[in-house]
Length: 452
Image 1 (cartoon, one colour):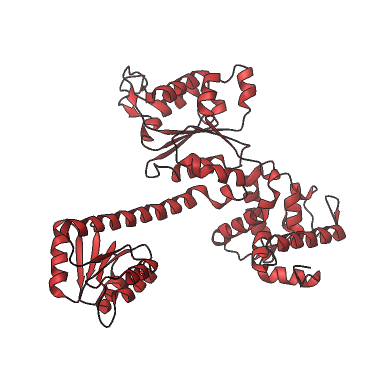
Image 2 (cartoon, one colour):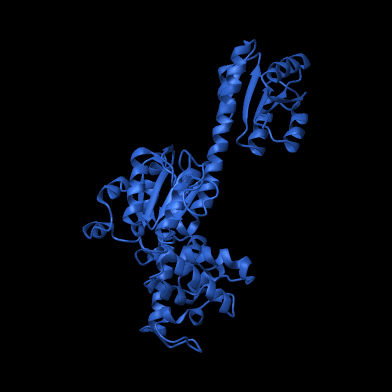
């Protein structure tokens, strides 16, 4: 894609001179004789860089700089003037100018400044793209509440060290792996995922390493393995604890030699992949039972990351609930404002053996069966109530009476208000209910002064 530069100068000779110079360098040039015309161009097209004269009427270079930063904050601006002063330069820099050049200037000087400005613009775009990729890859449900994971993740991502992610099923181990890939130095590479528990040994070996033509009956053509497909990217080995000892030996060779051999081939093929493995098994016990190779474990366990189960992250449940309600609004075609505090109390008391995945399924089910716009106790599944599904709102739920549920609800609201320092909107969001619902509850419990 051609780099686009907008040149703004009321002196046609200077404008044309700059245009010809930068055109010869391969840049796409648009000219404007003043700030008004430049504003029109900025409204119609996207530019990587704006070069503008400082002394223009009626729209000055500084006015144009303000306009550019309002319309496109990431676009860099270089100002040019024959009347440079330190005061004007400082003002321009404070307004966001990339550089300030005084006439007359050398050709190499202006080219160097342009290259530097465009490099900064490119880096900004990469950072914005990376943020988008991290958000998409990580997912809200994967990161909320994982304070320890979030602390180490940015540093881990910027290396190529092998990572071993441990945690129960449903906690979001693959989301962690995808986040590592998205925040790494190879986010544009391929992210490939394979579960070692999903395939029998021979099929898994073929999937991982590929084969050459004639390697076995039915191998009518050579085929790349998934490790080759991930070259330049990240390879995620899920449920590594379920891999056979034979597969483990081959994976160890990949980690040691950074190369693979297709089935039926004597030739080694180099691969450049970032390895992330995950397991819900206790690999230390597996090693003692000779079911997992020690040398592979130590190769994988360079950077260990443990994803805690949801039962150890009770405070994460309200924002997760709010996220899943938002996620299924469009799919279920039902408007739900939130969850009643009584129902939220029970959700937070539940052990969640299926972790985040189970919570998502429960919220989806509650949204389907709910009659009102608030998910309530009667919408909860029997396993969370600890009894058969009730036909009406029960008086006794898992040992919680109406009075104790009300007290728990009041304490839950107080805790949320305290953590948000009295910010009702933030407190409502953390509880997974609407601001209006929270205000009604505050009035009911006489909690009008959040700091009391």
